[in-house]
Length: 326
Image (cartoon, rainbow, N blue to C red):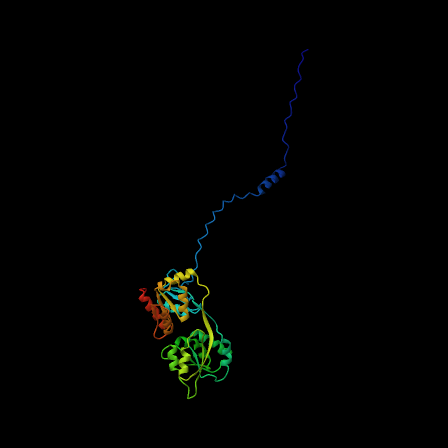
């Protein structure tokens, strides 16, 4: 009997487990809903270097809205204006019409005078004085404040010139109790004292509110003519406490410095370390200031025969022509 080997039983193939179609779909959707990471950000650009710091200048760019200005922001100043800050705009505007650039450098400031507090009570007395004599715009401004505090009494005012008279224009337009009744033929204190009219045959009484630094020319001239003069030192002037050295250097190079008082002339000379080496021009508002400038040693001094804004501008233009700047 032939022996035969048993036929091996074939190993059944392992079938992959059946995945339900719903689970496959869910898994596919889950993968598609996973958030996609954003692309990497580019590196930030290098920080720009800071702009160079610019030095500020007190010269103000010219424009119709900026009265105290130079004719162009980049031009060198031709005229230095030196009145108290805020009081140079009329002159700068007038010069701007001629294309002249200005640098504002206030040289003086005003302070309260020892007699200021007396002024309102003195003005409140009816008919105490026949004349009130005013010889500068600042004296006029100080007087007006005291006059209002006194209740705007009736007063008759004599002024040294048209520039001082302009301080009273607005008041005279709306109030008839203040009357500017006299201006001398020449705008100097000496001429005012010689020409102020007497009223009747009585002894004329004059109130003279003035700067503490004003000379005695007016009161002496009036007293010599028989007037009874009461002087009150209602304000004074002092040099400004600080001047920027860079601005001063710029001012020293300007061909013309415009000054409106002897105090401003003295303040300017005090700023110059070597006055004898400074050889530019000074344009003065009037003869009184010009005389002080000459006494203090300045050589190139210009001033108008008839003080006022127009005459002052004309003197500045003359000074610029002398320096070949026009």
